[in-house]
Length: 248
Image (tube, rainbow, N blue to C red; front, side):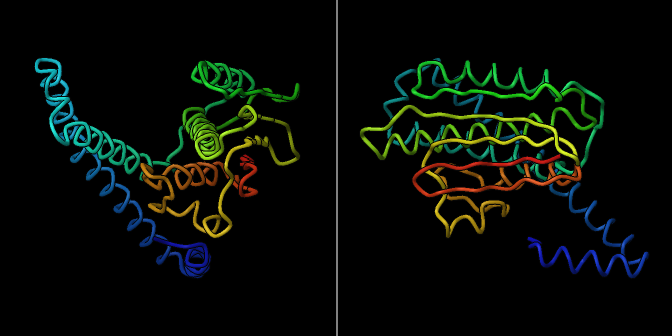
């Protein structure tokens, strides 16, 4: 996997030689298509296996009591999720740009995510500044980034709740505002925070510190931000919470 220093060197070499740029772009495109193809070919049979196992369980409920049955179901679902994320990773920089209402999109995301928090000790609040109106970008992919960040925030709070007996209610706050260069969206939580050692690799693909993580969510999110000529950064205090900043 390319690291930031590799990308800088690659860009310099591509700027110096147009033919080199053409070859590298073709190699990257081939790599993307290969990833997408592998993801597709793996996901299809896994989905069939999952469907078959669900059918077996529906017809023979006693299998739930079988040794390792539940674990096998979870492993298959994890592999399907991984295949889906590999597909998303390979296409995360391919944009379908349209002019859409960012204000409406953010309001819908906050509302739907709030519904998913019902029955938990977590609440989400939003502050969308009045000057947030329309935006030219890939609406679906921006939604993907925001939902991924909100989901991570919820998991960080749940992780904190699991490790601390007496814990104040979980809070997630989304603040969207205009800047000179575009729109900035900050998502803050009061969860477990990120270990300073782990902070160095949170955006690296296939690097995860979650038990069931794939290590692709934040990497995909950053690629989508960069495809919009923007950035995705994080500030975190271990044990107190994190703030992710999407500037696009």
